[in-house]
Image (cartoon, rainbow, N blue to C red):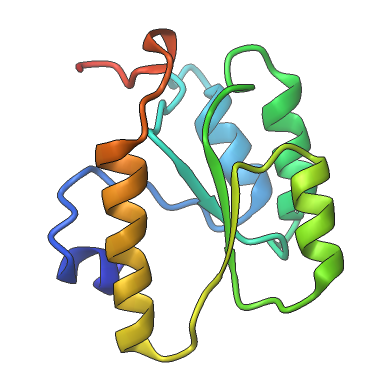
Length: 128
């Protein structure tokens, strides 16, 4: 969050602590409307429901199947990269451990996914 704020990314940021919570936000739960993000940043090693299975459920649902998903992780496991792409991830980025380097990655992510990338009109977040 600090790296995103440092880069003046002003979009609302919603944080899910695990895969189950992420799906609850994306699909809506207990009468809450679903969150419609521009992009989902997620780690393949999420608790409760891992990022790969969370991604599989996102891709299986017509309402979220075209939602951009980026795996952002410190994992250097090639198996995580392969499983992510086989499940339909849009990008896989190794998160630098150094905060300054990570801040630069966050800036580039913000520029690409929030400014340059064009989503289908049906997937535009509400209010835009």
